[in-house]
Amino acid sequence: MKLSSSVFASFCLITELLGIALFLRGFFPVPIKSSLSSKSKLSDLPAEPVVGSNPNSTKVPPPLFNRVVIVLIDALRDDFVFGPSGKRFMPYTRNLVESGSSHSFIAKARPPTVTMPRIKALTTGSIPGFIDVVLNLNSQALLEDNLLWQAKNTGKRIIFYGDDTWVRLFPKHFLEYDGTTSFFVSDYTEVDNNVTRHLDSTLKRDDWDVLILHYLGLDHIGHISGPHSSLIGPKLLEMDDVMKKIHTSVITTEAEGTLPNLLVLCGDHGMSETGSHGGSSEAEVNTPLVLISPAFPTKEDMGEPVVVEQVDLTPTLALALALPISQNSVGRLIPAVFEKASLREQLRYLHINGHQLSSLLRDSNPGFHKEDGYEQFQMAEKAHGSWMKLYVEGNTSEVLSNIAKKVLKQYLEALQAMSAALSKQLGKYDMYSMMVGMSLILQEMSVILTLSALWTCLIHSEALPLHGALINWRLQPGDCLGWYRLKYHEIVLDLNSTWTFSLWLLGLRLLLWSRVCNYHIQFCSQVSFGEQWTSSTKTSCKNHNELYFTFALSVIT
Image (cartoon, rainbow, N blue to C red; front, side, top):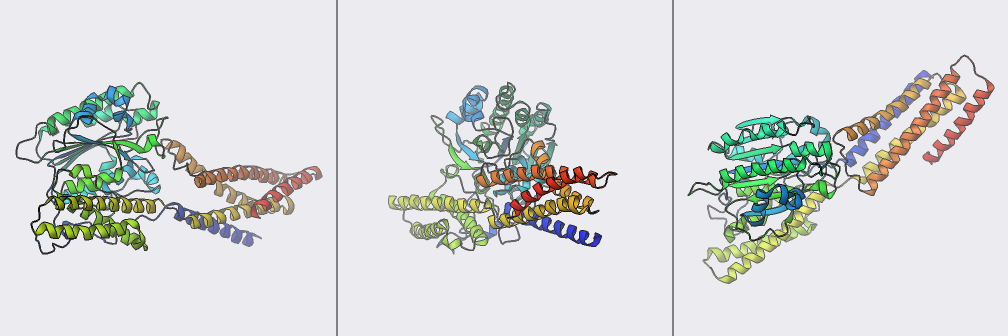
Protein backbone atom coordinates (compact mmCIF):
# COMPACT_ATOMS: atom_id res chain seq x y z
CA MET A 1 0.00 0.00 0.00
CA LYS A 2 2.86 2.36 0.80
CA LEU A 3 4.48 1.63 -2.57
CA SER A 4 1.27 2.28 -4.49
CA SER A 5 0.71 5.48 -2.51
CA SER A 6 4.20 6.70 -3.38
CA VAL A 7 3.63 5.96 -7.04
CA PHE A 8 0.30 7.76 -6.89
CA ALA A 9 1.89 10.76 -5.18
CA SER A 10 4.68 10.91 -7.77
CA PHE A 11 2.15 10.71 -10.58
CA CYS A 12 0.13 13.59 -9.09
CA LEU A 13 3.21 15.76 -8.62
CA ILE A 14 4.41 15.17 -12.19
CA THR A 15 0.93 15.88 -13.58
CA GLU A 16 0.69 19.06 -11.51
CA LEU A 17 4.10 20.32 -12.65
CA LEU A 18 3.32 19.48 -16.27
CA GLY A 19 0.03 21.38 -16.06
CA ILE A 20 1.68 24.41 -14.49
CA ALA A 21 4.48 24.36 -17.09
CA LEU A 22 2.00 24.21 -19.98
CA PHE A 23 -0.10 27.02 -18.51
CA LEU A 24 2.92 29.26 -17.95
CA ARG A 25 4.19 28.51 -21.46
CA GLY A 26 0.91 29.80 -22.85
CA PHE A 27 0.58 32.75 -20.47
CA PHE A 28 4.10 34.12 -21.00
CA PRO A 29 4.55 34.63 -24.75
CA VAL A 30 7.92 33.86 -26.33
CA PRO A 31 9.81 37.18 -26.77
CA ILE A 32 10.31 38.46 -30.30
CA LYS A 33 14.03 38.56 -31.06
CA SER A 34 16.09 39.18 -34.15
CA SER A 35 17.90 36.21 -35.69
CA LEU A 36 21.17 38.14 -35.44
CA SER A 37 23.17 37.18 -32.36
CA SER A 38 25.20 40.38 -32.14
CA LYS A 39 23.96 43.91 -31.57
CA SER A 40 23.06 46.37 -34.31
CA LYS A 41 25.92 48.09 -36.11
CA LEU A 42 26.08 51.15 -38.32
CA SER A 43 27.84 49.03 -40.92
CA ASP A 44 24.76 46.80 -41.14
CA LEU A 45 22.44 49.60 -42.22
CA PRO A 46 20.68 49.07 -45.55
CA ALA A 47 21.72 51.10 -48.55
CA GLU A 48 19.48 53.81 -49.90
CA PRO A 49 17.35 52.38 -52.71
CA VAL A 50 18.98 52.57 -56.17
CA VAL A 51 22.02 54.60 -55.11
CA GLY A 52 24.10 51.59 -54.05
CA SER A 53 27.32 52.98 -55.50
CA ASN A 54 27.22 56.23 -53.54
CA PRO A 55 29.71 56.06 -50.60
CA ASN A 56 27.18 57.79 -48.33
CA SER A 57 24.28 55.50 -49.25
CA THR A 58 24.77 53.12 -46.33
CA LYS A 59 25.28 55.76 -43.65
CA VAL A 60 22.81 57.17 -41.18
CA PRO A 61 22.19 60.92 -41.59
CA PRO A 62 24.19 63.18 -39.26
CA PRO A 63 22.93 63.67 -35.67
CA LEU A 64 20.29 66.28 -34.96
CA PHE A 65 21.27 66.97 -31.34
CA ASN A 66 24.44 67.48 -29.34
CA ARG A 67 23.51 66.76 -25.72
CA VAL A 68 20.44 64.99 -24.39
CA VAL A 69 18.93 65.30 -20.92
CA ILE A 70 16.21 62.78 -20.00
CA VAL A 71 14.07 63.60 -16.95
CA LEU A 72 12.00 60.55 -16.04
CA ILE A 73 9.47 61.16 -13.27
CA ASP A 74 8.14 57.90 -11.88
CA ALA A 75 4.32 57.55 -12.07
CA LEU A 76 3.89 60.84 -13.96
CA ARG A 77 0.36 60.78 -15.39
CA ASP A 78 -0.42 62.70 -18.55
CA ASP A 79 -2.90 64.99 -16.74
CA PHE A 80 -0.16 66.02 -14.29
CA VAL A 81 1.35 67.97 -17.22
CA PHE A 82 -1.42 68.47 -19.77
CA GLY A 83 -4.36 68.76 -17.37
CA PRO A 84 -5.40 71.33 -14.74
CA SER A 85 -2.74 70.02 -12.32
CA GLY A 86 -0.03 70.84 -14.84
CA LYS A 87 -1.29 74.36 -15.38
CA ARG A 88 -1.36 74.98 -11.63
CA PHE A 89 1.69 73.14 -10.35
CA MET A 90 4.03 72.97 -13.35
CA PRO A 91 3.71 76.48 -14.84
CA TYR A 92 7.19 76.68 -16.39
CA THR A 93 6.91 73.30 -18.07
CA ARG A 94 3.37 74.03 -19.18
CA ASN A 95 4.51 77.28 -20.78
CA LEU A 96 7.15 75.36 -22.74
CA VAL A 97 4.46 72.91 -23.84
CA GLU A 98 2.01 75.60 -24.93
CA SER A 99 4.27 78.17 -26.55
CA GLY A 100 7.86 76.94 -26.47
CA SER A 101 10.01 75.10 -28.99
CA SER A 102 8.67 71.69 -28.12
CA HIS A 103 6.63 68.69 -29.20
CA SER A 104 4.13 67.13 -26.80
CA PHE A 105 2.78 63.58 -26.88
CA ILE A 106 0.82 61.12 -24.79
CA ALA A 107 3.02 58.02 -24.68
CA LYS A 108 1.07 54.84 -24.04
CA ALA A 109 2.86 52.26 -21.90
CA ARG A 110 1.94 48.59 -22.27
CA PRO A 111 1.08 46.47 -19.21
CA PRO A 112 2.64 45.50 -16.91
CA THR A 113 3.06 49.14 -15.88
CA VAL A 114 5.89 48.50 -13.44
CA THR A 115 9.19 50.40 -13.40
CA MET A 116 11.73 47.79 -14.53
CA PRO A 117 9.74 46.56 -17.56
CA ARG A 118 9.10 50.18 -18.54
CA ILE A 119 12.82 51.01 -18.36
CA LYS A 120 13.48 48.03 -20.60
CA ALA A 121 10.83 49.24 -23.03
CA LEU A 122 12.30 52.75 -23.14
CA THR A 123 15.84 51.53 -23.76
CA THR A 124 15.30 48.48 -26.00
CA GLY A 125 12.10 49.47 -27.80
CA SER A 126 10.64 46.04 -27.10
CA ILE A 127 7.60 45.21 -24.96
CA PRO A 128 8.51 43.20 -21.83
CA GLY A 129 6.04 40.60 -20.56
CA PHE A 130 4.48 39.77 -17.21
CA ILE A 131 7.46 37.63 -16.22
CA ASP A 132 9.41 40.88 -15.87
CA VAL A 133 7.19 41.81 -12.91
CA VAL A 134 8.77 38.98 -10.94
CA LEU A 135 12.24 39.87 -12.22
CA ASN A 136 11.58 43.46 -11.13
CA LEU A 137 12.48 42.45 -7.58
CA ASN A 138 15.94 41.29 -8.64
CA SER A 139 16.91 43.16 -11.78
CA GLN A 140 19.92 41.74 -13.57
CA ALA A 141 22.18 43.37 -16.16
CA LEU A 142 20.38 43.88 -19.45
CA LEU A 143 22.21 41.97 -22.19
CA GLU A 144 19.70 42.72 -24.94
CA ASP A 145 20.58 45.32 -27.57
CA ASN A 146 19.62 48.72 -26.16
CA LEU A 147 19.97 52.45 -26.64
CA LEU A 148 22.46 52.97 -23.80
CA TRP A 149 24.78 50.28 -25.11
CA GLN A 150 24.69 51.82 -28.58
CA ALA A 151 25.41 55.28 -27.16
CA LYS A 152 28.34 54.06 -25.05
CA ASN A 153 29.68 51.98 -27.93
CA THR A 154 29.93 55.09 -30.11
CA GLY A 155 31.82 57.00 -27.43
CA LYS A 156 29.01 58.95 -25.78
CA ARG A 157 29.51 59.70 -22.09
CA ILE A 158 26.45 58.95 -19.95
CA ILE A 159 25.73 60.17 -16.41
CA PHE A 160 22.86 58.84 -14.32
CA TYR A 161 21.23 59.83 -11.02
CA GLY A 162 18.10 58.23 -9.57
CA ASP A 163 16.37 54.87 -9.23
CA ASP A 164 19.07 52.21 -8.82
CA THR A 165 17.17 49.85 -11.14
CA TRP A 166 19.08 51.58 -13.93
CA VAL A 167 22.38 50.81 -12.22
CA ARG A 168 21.50 47.12 -11.96
CA LEU A 169 20.35 46.96 -15.58
CA PHE A 170 23.31 48.94 -16.93
CA PRO A 171 26.20 48.38 -14.50
CA LYS A 172 29.01 49.34 -16.91
CA HIS A 173 27.36 52.00 -19.04
CA PHE A 174 27.69 55.14 -16.92
CA LEU A 175 30.61 57.52 -16.63
CA GLU A 176 29.18 58.53 -13.25
CA TYR A 177 26.10 57.47 -11.29
CA ASP A 178 24.35 57.69 -7.94
CA GLY A 179 21.51 55.24 -7.39
CA THR A 180 18.64 55.63 -4.94
CA THR A 181 16.56 52.70 -3.68
CA SER A 182 12.86 52.54 -4.53
CA PHE A 183 11.68 50.33 -1.66
CA PHE A 184 11.44 52.99 1.06
CA VAL A 185 8.00 54.02 -0.11
CA SER A 186 7.41 56.35 2.82
CA ASP A 187 10.32 58.54 1.71
CA TYR A 188 9.37 61.03 -0.97
CA THR A 189 11.77 63.85 -0.04
CA GLU A 190 15.33 62.59 0.35
CA VAL A 191 14.91 60.15 -2.50
CA ASP A 192 14.56 63.13 -4.87
CA ASN A 193 16.97 65.45 -3.04
CA ASN A 194 19.69 62.86 -3.63
CA VAL A 195 19.13 63.32 -7.37
CA THR A 196 18.77 67.11 -7.50
CA ARG A 197 21.86 67.74 -5.35
CA HIS A 198 24.05 66.72 -8.31
CA LEU A 199 22.38 69.04 -10.83
CA ASP A 200 24.20 72.36 -10.27
CA SER A 201 27.68 70.90 -10.61
CA THR A 202 26.79 68.48 -13.43
CA LEU A 203 25.08 71.07 -15.62
CA LYS A 204 28.22 73.22 -15.51
CA ARG A 205 30.41 70.38 -16.75
CA ASP A 206 31.15 69.64 -20.38
CA ASP A 207 32.38 66.05 -20.00
CA TRP A 208 29.05 64.32 -20.67
CA ASP A 209 26.76 63.77 -23.66
CA VAL A 210 23.70 62.12 -22.08
CA LEU A 211 22.26 62.89 -18.63
CA ILE A 212 19.49 60.69 -17.21
CA LEU A 213 17.53 61.61 -14.06
CA HIS A 214 14.94 59.26 -12.55
CA TYR A 215 12.82 60.81 -9.78
CA LEU A 216 10.86 58.48 -7.45
CA GLY A 217 9.12 60.86 -5.04
CA LEU A 218 5.87 61.26 -6.99
CA ASP A 219 5.41 57.50 -7.23
CA HIS A 220 5.95 57.12 -3.49
CA ILE A 221 3.36 59.80 -2.72
CA GLY A 222 0.90 57.96 -4.94
CA HIS A 223 1.38 54.73 -3.01
CA ILE A 224 0.99 56.56 0.29
CA SER A 225 -2.06 58.72 -0.36
CA GLY A 226 -3.10 58.58 -4.03
CA PRO A 227 -3.08 61.03 -6.96
CA HIS A 228 -5.34 63.60 -5.29
CA SER A 229 -3.22 63.97 -2.18
CA SER A 230 -2.23 67.42 -0.94
CA LEU A 231 1.39 66.25 -1.33
CA ILE A 232 1.09 65.95 -5.12
CA GLY A 233 1.06 69.71 -5.77
CA PRO A 234 4.31 70.55 -3.93
CA LYS A 235 6.04 67.58 -5.56
CA LEU A 236 5.00 68.73 -9.06
CA LEU A 237 6.23 72.24 -8.24
CA GLU A 238 9.56 70.71 -7.22
CA MET A 239 9.77 68.83 -10.53
CA ASP A 240 8.89 72.04 -12.39
CA ASP A 241 11.84 73.78 -10.74
CA VAL A 242 14.08 70.93 -11.92
CA MET A 243 12.82 71.38 -15.49
CA LYS A 244 13.40 75.14 -15.28
CA LYS A 245 16.95 74.69 -14.01
CA ILE A 246 17.85 72.24 -16.79
CA HIS A 247 16.14 74.27 -19.50
CA THR A 248 17.86 77.52 -18.58
CA SER A 249 21.24 75.81 -18.21
CA VAL A 250 21.32 73.41 -21.17
CA ILE A 251 18.74 74.55 -23.73
CA THR A 252 18.75 78.38 -23.68
CA THR A 253 22.52 78.83 -23.23
CA GLU A 254 23.85 76.72 -26.10
CA ALA A 255 27.18 77.65 -27.64
CA GLU A 256 27.11 79.03 -31.15
CA GLY A 257 28.17 76.75 -33.96
CA THR A 258 27.13 73.57 -32.16
CA LEU A 259 24.15 71.31 -32.63
CA PRO A 260 21.10 72.10 -30.46
CA ASN A 261 20.52 70.16 -27.27
CA LEU A 262 17.43 68.13 -26.39
CA LEU A 263 15.47 67.95 -23.13
CA VAL A 264 13.09 65.00 -22.70
CA LEU A 265 10.40 64.86 -20.02
CA CYS A 266 8.63 61.52 -19.62
CA GLY A 267 7.14 59.04 -17.17
CA ASP A 268 7.69 55.30 -16.96
CA HIS A 269 4.02 54.66 -16.17
CA GLY A 270 1.00 56.45 -14.77
CA MET A 271 -0.93 56.20 -11.53
CA SER A 272 -4.38 54.77 -10.85
CA GLU A 273 -7.04 56.56 -8.84
CA THR A 274 -5.89 54.61 -5.78
CA GLY A 275 -2.24 55.55 -6.33
CA SER A 276 -1.07 52.14 -7.51
CA HIS A 277 0.11 50.93 -10.89
CA GLY A 278 0.69 47.69 -12.76
CA GLY A 279 -2.58 47.38 -14.67
CA SER A 280 -3.97 48.62 -17.96
CA SER A 281 -6.29 51.47 -17.00
CA GLU A 282 -5.85 54.75 -18.90
CA ALA A 283 -4.51 56.50 -15.82
CA GLU A 284 -1.80 53.85 -15.55
CA VAL A 285 -0.75 53.60 -19.21
CA ASN A 286 -1.00 57.24 -20.35
CA THR A 287 2.19 59.18 -19.65
CA PRO A 288 3.39 62.57 -20.94
CA LEU A 289 6.26 62.80 -23.39
CA VAL A 290 7.61 66.31 -23.97
CA LEU A 291 10.57 66.97 -26.27
CA ILE A 292 12.12 70.44 -25.91
CA SER A 293 14.80 71.85 -28.20
CA PRO A 294 15.62 75.03 -30.19
CA ALA A 295 15.56 72.72 -33.23
CA PHE A 296 11.77 72.62 -33.01
CA PRO A 297 9.50 75.43 -34.22
CA THR A 298 7.84 77.68 -31.65
CA LYS A 299 4.12 77.01 -31.28
CA GLU A 300 1.33 79.52 -30.73
CA ASP A 301 -0.74 77.13 -28.63
CA MET A 302 -0.46 73.63 -27.19
CA GLY A 303 -3.14 71.89 -29.20
CA GLU A 304 -4.11 68.30 -28.51
CA PRO A 305 -1.10 66.07 -27.69
CA VAL A 306 -0.54 63.35 -30.28
CA VAL A 307 -0.78 59.77 -29.00
CA VAL A 308 2.31 57.61 -29.57
CA GLU A 309 3.61 54.35 -28.13
CA GLN A 310 6.18 54.56 -25.35
CA VAL A 311 8.54 52.33 -27.36
CA ASP A 312 8.52 54.92 -30.20
CA LEU A 313 10.98 57.03 -28.21
CA THR A 314 13.74 54.42 -28.63
CA PRO A 315 14.19 54.49 -32.43
CA THR A 316 13.51 58.24 -32.45
CA LEU A 317 16.38 59.02 -30.06
CA ALA A 318 18.64 56.48 -31.75
CA LEU A 319 18.42 58.01 -35.22
CA ALA A 320 18.36 61.57 -33.86
CA LEU A 321 21.78 60.80 -32.32
CA ALA A 322 23.00 58.92 -35.42
CA LEU A 323 22.90 55.55 -33.62
CA PRO A 324 21.61 52.24 -34.98
CA ILE A 325 18.16 51.14 -33.79
CA SER A 326 18.13 48.29 -31.27
CA GLN A 327 17.55 44.97 -33.03
CA ASN A 328 14.42 43.97 -31.11
CA SER A 329 12.74 47.37 -31.11
CA VAL A 330 9.10 47.39 -32.21
CA GLY A 331 8.83 51.19 -32.06
CA ARG A 332 8.45 53.57 -34.99
CA LEU A 333 9.89 57.02 -35.54
CA ILE A 334 8.08 60.09 -34.28
CA PRO A 335 8.06 62.11 -37.53
CA ALA A 336 7.70 65.53 -35.88
CA VAL A 337 11.27 65.26 -34.52
CA PHE A 338 12.72 65.02 -38.04
CA GLU A 339 10.52 67.53 -39.86
CA LYS A 340 13.36 70.08 -40.24
CA ALA A 341 15.63 67.58 -41.95
CA SER A 342 15.86 67.52 -45.76
CA LEU A 343 13.43 65.32 -47.69
CA ARG A 344 16.20 62.89 -48.55
CA GLU A 345 17.18 62.59 -44.88
CA GLN A 346 13.56 62.14 -43.77
CA LEU A 347 13.13 59.32 -46.29
CA ARG A 348 16.39 57.81 -45.15
CA TYR A 349 15.32 57.83 -41.48
CA LEU A 350 12.04 56.09 -42.30
CA HIS A 351 13.77 53.61 -44.59
CA ILE A 352 16.19 52.56 -41.84
CA ASN A 353 13.35 52.15 -39.34
CA GLY A 354 11.25 50.23 -41.88
CA HIS A 355 14.12 47.89 -42.75
CA GLN A 356 14.68 47.12 -39.05
CA LEU A 357 10.99 46.41 -38.39
CA SER A 358 10.58 44.32 -41.54
CA SER A 359 13.64 42.25 -40.62
CA LEU A 360 12.25 41.63 -37.13
CA LEU A 361 8.86 40.72 -38.59
CA ARG A 362 10.50 38.34 -41.05
CA ASP A 363 12.48 36.62 -38.27
CA SER A 364 9.54 36.22 -35.89
CA ASN A 365 6.54 35.56 -38.13
CA PRO A 366 6.55 32.72 -40.70
CA GLY A 367 3.65 34.41 -42.50
CA PHE A 368 5.37 37.81 -42.65
CA HIS A 369 4.77 38.17 -46.40
CA LYS A 370 1.02 38.22 -45.76
CA GLU A 371 1.23 41.13 -43.34
CA ASP A 372 -0.15 44.38 -44.78
CA GLY A 373 2.67 46.40 -43.24
CA TYR A 374 5.36 44.28 -44.89
CA GLU A 375 3.76 44.66 -48.32
CA GLN A 376 3.33 48.40 -47.78
CA PHE A 377 7.01 48.71 -46.88
CA GLN A 378 8.05 46.89 -50.05
CA MET A 379 5.92 49.28 -52.12
CA ALA A 380 7.26 52.34 -50.27
CA GLU A 381 10.83 51.15 -50.78
CA LYS A 382 10.27 50.84 -54.54
CA ALA A 383 8.71 54.29 -54.65
CA HIS A 384 11.68 55.59 -52.64
CA GLY A 385 14.03 54.10 -55.22
CA SER A 386 12.19 55.85 -58.05
CA TRP A 387 12.39 59.14 -56.18
CA MET A 388 16.12 58.66 -55.54
CA LYS A 389 16.71 58.14 -59.24
CA LEU A 390 15.08 61.49 -60.01
CA TYR A 391 16.96 63.13 -57.13
CA VAL A 392 20.38 61.90 -58.28
CA GLU A 393 19.65 63.13 -61.79
CA GLY A 394 19.40 66.63 -60.33
CA ASN A 395 15.65 67.08 -60.61
CA THR A 396 14.59 69.74 -58.09
CA SER A 397 11.09 70.49 -59.31
CA GLU A 398 8.00 70.75 -57.14
CA VAL A 399 6.91 67.42 -58.58
CA LEU A 400 9.88 65.77 -56.85
CA SER A 401 8.80 67.31 -53.55
CA ASN A 402 5.24 66.06 -53.96
CA ILE A 403 6.46 62.55 -54.77
CA ALA A 404 8.66 62.58 -51.66
CA LYS A 405 5.69 63.52 -49.47
CA LYS A 406 3.68 60.61 -50.89
CA VAL A 407 6.57 58.22 -50.20
CA LEU A 408 6.84 59.58 -46.65
CA LYS A 409 3.17 58.83 -46.12
CA GLN A 410 3.60 55.30 -47.48
CA TYR A 411 6.52 54.69 -45.14
CA LEU A 412 4.62 55.99 -42.10
CA GLU A 413 1.64 53.75 -42.84
CA ALA A 414 3.92 50.75 -43.29
CA LEU A 415 5.77 51.50 -40.03
CA GLN A 416 2.52 51.79 -38.12
CA ALA A 417 1.21 48.49 -39.49
CA MET A 418 4.43 46.55 -38.84
CA SER A 419 4.82 47.98 -35.35
CA ALA A 420 1.22 47.07 -34.52
CA ALA A 421 1.69 43.52 -35.87
CA LEU A 422 4.83 42.97 -33.78
CA SER A 423 3.23 44.44 -30.65
CA LYS A 424 0.18 42.22 -31.10
CA GLN A 425 2.39 39.17 -31.46
CA LEU A 426 4.20 40.01 -28.21
CA GLY A 427 0.90 40.13 -26.31
CA LYS A 428 -0.57 37.01 -27.90
CA TYR A 429 -1.36 34.13 -25.52
CA ASP A 430 -1.10 30.46 -26.48
CA MET A 431 -4.65 29.57 -25.50
CA TYR A 432 -4.24 25.88 -26.39
CA SER A 433 -1.33 25.41 -23.96
CA MET A 434 -3.20 27.33 -21.27
CA MET A 435 -6.34 25.21 -21.65
CA VAL A 436 -4.43 21.90 -21.64
CA GLY A 437 -2.41 22.96 -18.61
CA MET A 438 -5.49 24.07 -16.70
CA SER A 439 -7.29 20.84 -17.57
CA LEU A 440 -4.42 18.73 -16.22
CA ILE A 441 -4.38 20.73 -12.99
CA LEU A 442 -8.15 20.39 -12.53
CA GLN A 443 -8.16 16.65 -13.26
CA GLU A 444 -5.24 15.99 -10.93
CA MET A 445 -6.81 17.98 -8.13
CA SER A 446 -10.19 16.30 -8.54
CA VAL A 447 -8.62 12.84 -8.32
CA ILE A 448 -6.65 13.76 -5.20
CA LEU A 449 -9.67 15.19 -3.40
CA THR A 450 -11.93 12.31 -4.35
CA LEU A 451 -9.55 9.47 -3.44
CA SER A 452 -8.40 11.22 -0.27
CA ALA A 453 -11.97 11.46 0.96
CA LEU A 454 -12.69 7.84 -0.01
CA TRP A 455 -9.56 6.43 1.61
CA THR A 456 -10.06 8.46 4.76
CA CYS A 457 -13.66 7.66 5.57
CA LEU A 458 -14.31 4.35 3.84
CA ILE A 459 -10.98 2.55 3.87
CA HIS A 460 -9.24 4.32 6.82
CA SER A 461 -5.94 4.28 4.91
CA GLU A 462 -2.71 5.13 6.72
CA ALA A 463 -1.72 7.02 3.58
CA LEU A 464 -4.01 9.88 4.60
CA PRO A 465 -1.20 12.24 5.69
CA LEU A 466 0.40 11.80 2.28
CA HIS A 467 -2.73 12.77 0.40
CA GLY A 468 -3.45 15.62 2.79
CA ALA A 469 0.06 16.88 2.17
CA LEU A 470 -0.57 16.74 -1.57
CA ILE A 471 -3.62 18.95 -1.20
CA ASN A 472 -1.78 21.42 1.00
CA TRP A 473 1.12 21.48 -1.50
CA ARG A 474 -1.37 22.18 -4.26
CA LEU A 475 -2.66 25.23 -2.42
CA GLN A 476 0.66 26.84 -1.54
CA PRO A 477 1.59 28.28 -5.00
CA GLY A 478 -1.73 30.07 -5.18
CA ASP A 479 -1.26 31.49 -1.69
CA CYS A 480 2.24 32.73 -2.53
CA LEU A 481 1.20 34.31 -5.81
CA GLY A 482 -1.72 35.97 -4.09
CA TRP A 483 0.60 37.40 -1.43
CA TYR A 484 2.96 38.76 -4.10
CA ARG A 485 0.10 40.34 -6.00
CA LEU A 486 -1.19 42.13 -2.93
CA LYS A 487 2.14 43.18 -1.46
CA TYR A 488 3.98 44.48 -4.50
CA HIS A 489 2.35 47.90 -4.79
CA GLU A 490 -1.07 46.26 -5.36
CA ILE A 491 -0.09 45.24 -8.90
CA VAL A 492 -3.04 44.09 -10.99
CA LEU A 493 -1.91 42.09 -14.00
CA ASP A 494 -4.36 42.59 -16.84
CA LEU A 495 -7.54 41.45 -15.10
CA ASN A 496 -9.75 43.22 -17.62
CA SER A 497 -10.12 40.39 -20.12
CA THR A 498 -12.93 37.89 -19.69
CA TRP A 499 -10.53 34.98 -19.95
CA THR A 500 -8.26 36.19 -17.16
CA PHE A 501 -11.21 37.07 -14.95
CA SER A 502 -12.68 33.60 -15.51
CA LEU A 503 -9.41 31.97 -14.52
CA TRP A 504 -9.26 33.94 -11.29
CA LEU A 505 -12.90 33.14 -10.54
CA LEU A 506 -12.25 29.45 -11.15
CA GLY A 507 -9.13 29.60 -9.00
CA LEU A 508 -11.13 31.12 -6.15
CA ARG A 509 -13.74 28.39 -6.47
CA LEU A 510 -11.07 25.69 -6.35
CA LEU A 511 -9.42 27.37 -3.38
CA LEU A 512 -12.64 27.40 -1.35
CA TRP A 513 -13.43 23.84 -2.40
CA SER A 514 -9.94 22.66 -1.41
CA ARG A 515 -10.12 24.35 1.98
CA VAL A 516 -13.47 22.75 2.77
CA CYS A 517 -12.33 19.31 1.62
CA ASN A 518 -9.08 19.62 3.52
CA TYR A 519 -11.00 20.49 6.65
CA HIS A 520 -13.19 17.47 6.02
CA ILE A 521 -10.17 15.19 5.64
CA GLN A 522 -8.62 16.47 8.84
CA PHE A 523 -11.91 15.84 10.64
CA CYS A 524 -12.13 12.31 9.33
CA SER A 525 -8.48 11.71 10.20
CA GLN A 526 -9.06 12.67 13.80
CA VAL A 527 -12.04 10.37 14.04
CA SER A 528 -10.40 7.48 12.14
CA PHE A 529 -7.22 7.44 14.19
CA GLY A 530 -8.79 8.48 17.48
CA GLU A 531 -9.40 6.28 20.45
CA GLN A 532 -13.14 5.95 19.73
CA TRP A 533 -14.92 5.27 16.49
CA THR A 534 -18.62 5.29 17.18
CA SER A 535 -21.23 4.24 14.69
CA SER A 536 -22.76 7.72 14.71
CA THR A 537 -19.50 9.47 13.84
CA LYS A 538 -18.73 6.84 11.24
CA THR A 539 -22.12 7.34 9.61
CA SER A 540 -21.72 11.10 9.71
CA CYS A 541 -18.28 10.88 8.14
CA LYS A 542 -19.57 8.51 5.48
CA ASN A 543 -22.44 10.86 4.63
CA HIS A 544 -20.02 13.78 4.35
CA ASN A 545 -17.80 11.71 2.09
CA GLU A 546 -20.72 10.87 -0.22
CA LEU A 547 -21.42 14.57 -0.54
CA TYR A 548 -17.82 15.42 -1.50
CA PHE A 549 -17.54 12.35 -3.72
CA THR A 550 -20.59 13.45 -5.70
CA PHE A 551 -19.23 17.01 -5.94
CA ALA A 552 -15.85 15.78 -7.18
CA LEU A 553 -17.44 13.57 -9.81
CA SER A 554 -19.42 16.53 -11.11
CA VAL A 555 -16.16 18.43 -11.71
CA ILE A 556 -14.46 15.47 -13.41
CA THR A 557 -17.38 14.90 -15.78
